[in-house]
Every structure is written in structure tokens, then in C-alpha cells.
Length: 425
Ligand SMILES: *Cc1c(COP(=O)(O)O)cnc(C)c1O
Image (cartoon, rainbow, N blue to C red; front, side, top):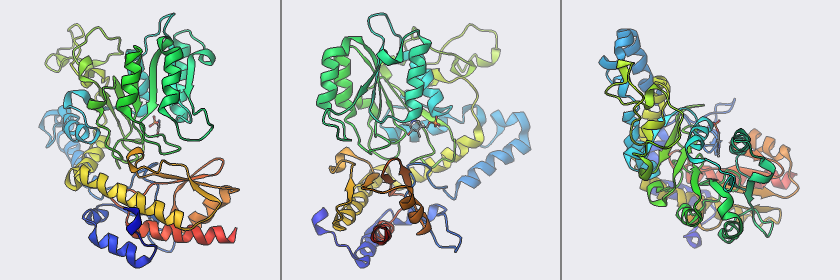
């Protein structure tokens, strides 16, 4: 693919002209700088842009609330009682799961705790948790606190999968080695499907197979995977997964999160769990007097009746995904990130290296670019040049060209501006 690329604005525009996804850019508000110029927004891995239709979807629910009050639960256009069910199938399509395996609820870190209540049951012989190097801090804190909650010591019980050669990318052989020596002591593996820092997309199926062969439970944090890569969660065989909806899923700041619980656990009523009335049988929920009767599948992990206004934004965003069709997005994503990679490599700068895997199967759209001797002023200069990306200490900029709204010309201009800034510093 790469060999046919060309580092000219005409070529980038030509790729845009051939891009079937291109019209979807108009479905989003693109932020602008003070001069009113559209930003080069490569930060969809932190906060996805607002779909223009989100407002309409939210307003519909505000109107039903005004019109019906409490009766909106049953009489609204989209009755709130079952509103979350409208999100299940489209969300399941994106993460490659069966509807019974998925529900939208709470926020990501909350869900990780709720899922660990079920899938981290340490015993004196098997009590450790394994996470990947450079795991997202919230996940590390969550896992450490779970370990402590059960009376174990994180210093001894938290195992980090890091690479033995000190390179940023992780290798499956190193994980294999850890499992070989400590597998029987590890209760749970909790791994980012796509690492937030390096952009490395792990082989979920292989990790799960390895871990299961040692009797460990497996969960994936798909915050950087959902809406970005082809997760195929059901086929991976993982026990559970969780993800937020405000990054690649464009559902608004702090919006609700998704969970996946593999079908094999769907009818297991003996799993430990924290319950609430929303995990109780829908038929008898409002009798209010019955013994707790857990719902099958992922719905059985819900606690509360959910915030409908936030769900309306998710519904709006998922409808854009349905129209754009996820497989087409994945295809564009690979080509767009490959073009971005080509342009960066074409700078032939000794100070720049891409730490994200080269193989498009091993990454999503994000490229993490290491700039030798750089500091945060590089990020400030990019911002002044109207490039919105993300800076990670000590020397990495993370850029995510998102297929739904970024263009080939966006990445062309980004690299052109980066080159100019690098020449100045
Ligand atoms: C973004 C992100 C989070 C954020 O957690 P919230 O509970 O939504 O604030 C957690 N973990 C990972 C891996 C993330 O990428």
C-alpha cells in the first residue's frame, strides 16, 4: 500500500476524493481556532467529536420529559424503561459480540470494579493480577485497590507484563514466560486491548488462550479499542471487557460506558456480583418485594436506571456508525494511518520515530510519535499551528486520525506543520 503514496497536497486531496467515508465528516462539528479556521483534530482517542445529530436526539428526550414527566418511562417516543436496549445491538456490532453479552451502563472505571467483583476472586494460592506495562493509570489504581480490598499486597500481587528488551512494544513471548512461571498464582489478566500510550493492538484471542490454559480469568479494557479496531470480543473468548464511549465512540464527555461478559457466564447465577434493581428480572422489577432474581447476560451487571440524556448522545453516535458501516471505517482507518506513517517517515528526521507497531493489523488509527529531545513546547507549537493532538511525557505525541471525520489532507497538513516546527526548534 505504502509504495504508491506520494507526499504532495494534490495526492492527499486525490485520496480524499476517492474516499467513500468522506461525506461523514459533515456529520460532525469540527473545532475551530480563534481565527475561525478548522483545526486538524487528531484527538479522537481522547474525546471524539460531537455528531451534529446528538443535539436532536437529546432534545427529543427533553421534550418527552417536559410532555410526560414520569410517564416518559413508558409513553415516550423511546420509552426510557427499555432505552438502554436500543443501544445494545449497535454496540455489540462494533465490539463483535452477541447482544446478550453487551450492555451500556455507568462509566469505565466503575465498570472495571463491578466486573472485578465477579471475575477477581483471589484465594491464598491464586491471588495475583497481571496488567500490561504503561497501562492507563486509572486501571492500575483500580487493580491495586482491588488487591488491597481483598487483603493482599499490590507490591507482590501486581504483575506487570513488560518487554524484556526495554523496547516500548510488548511481546507475547514475554507474557508466555510470565504465565509459565507464575500462571498458577495469577487470578486475573486485565489488559488494554489497544495500549493507550503506544497504540499497540494486542492479539486478544491468543492472550486469552494462553491465560485460560493456566486457569486465569481474562478481561480487556477496550477504551482505545472500541470503535477503533475490529475487537471480535466474542471470538476472543475473553471473560469480560469494558470500554468508554467518549473516545472513538463520539458520545460526549464522561458519557456512559459499555461492558461485555462472555456468553458462557450469561446464566451463571452463582457468580459474585454487586446487585441493584436494574440487574433484577424486568418482569418483577416494579413489584419491589421479590427476592433478587438476576437478569441473564451483561444486563445482570446493571445497578441503576441509567441517565437517558447521555444515552441519547450514544444512540445518535451509534446511528452514524451504522450508516458509515464499521468494516468500511476499518478499511479507511488502515489506509489513513498508513499514509500518515508514510508522511512522517518521509521527513527522514533522525529525531523522529514511531513507537506504534508498523503492521496495520497490530494497531488502530493512533500513531505515537517519539520526538527526541522534545519537550512540551513542541506540543504548544503544534497547538499554535492549529493541530490538536496529545502530549505524553517524556517525549511522545499521540495522533489519532479518525476515519469518520479526518481526511488524508488533514494528516498531510499535520506533517507539513510538524516539519516546519521541527526545523525551528
Ligand atoms: C480513557 C481511559 C480510562 C478512563 O476511565 P474513566 O472511568 O472513563 O474516567 C480508563 N482506562 C483506559 C485504558 C482509558 O483509555
